[in-house]
Length: 341
Ligand code: CP
Image 1 (cartoon, rainbow, N blue to C red):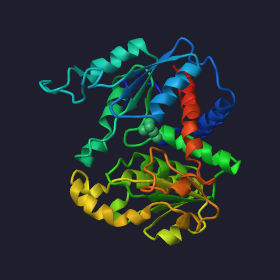
Image 2 (image 1 turned 90 degrees about the vertical axis):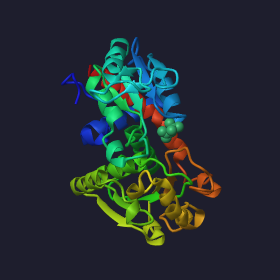
Image 3 (image 1 turned 180 degrees about the vertical axis):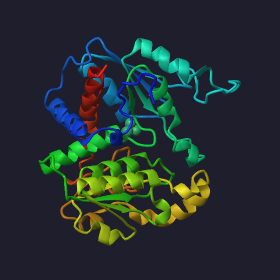
């Protein structure tokens, strides 16, 4: 994928061995206890934000600073030139420069590049190719980190670290894990759902994907990864459309809203369907069915739409711990990638 054959990127956890992921989680736990380091001394990272962020931007900037490095934030099309990603394109539109130059030039200045690029929400067959992230990885001479495109691997590690610390064990095998679709007035990215399904099965948990109907299943790529992961880890994967049976006995409830892929780009039609499932909101009655289970969400979260105030303010909610962990896992990722170049 990269012009530099030996270069290691952090694009998806599925590309990394379980041993390497465990090492990142262990290092992140260490950073949680030891805030400062010199692993990025004299080094820098360019953070390319094609979409808004609160947690990702703050935690990467602060994380680089705490390890002695420096972060530069660029928003192409806002405070940096719009970028073209198609090869061979006659660039007579908005884009002022091509990724082939952008990534190579950045590589002369910085040691790492982070990329946030959400889908365009028009044609999933195009968005599922993750062109922006892959183009950075192809042309960059330095490691590239996925800061959320169609998956969110940094969030995956933050989530798993929060579960490990809540249950006071690195071994999450056999835990009953529910990834529940939840309501949101707009159709959202499937990235966090793809990621949750991928990492929960990778960790050997007994995973249920709870969603309104078959149209809300995730892309076959991620359903297949999850099945393969469950088979290899000794975990399990099932799909349910029944709220009560899915929540009953759960150790973990992870909520996310996403748009139904068969309606991708036809969001008015999708909304008419989605609006029938407002009752998927996570509330106390549903959480009472669990095995005193924990609740989490990647944030941002609309209260009393996706989850009630009572759930968010309950001791079972570990969403703030998970958000904090973004700082620690990203320091581990940056330190690990810097060591590899
Ligand atoms: N969870 C997450 O990525 O948050 P931001 O969108 O605020 O970065």
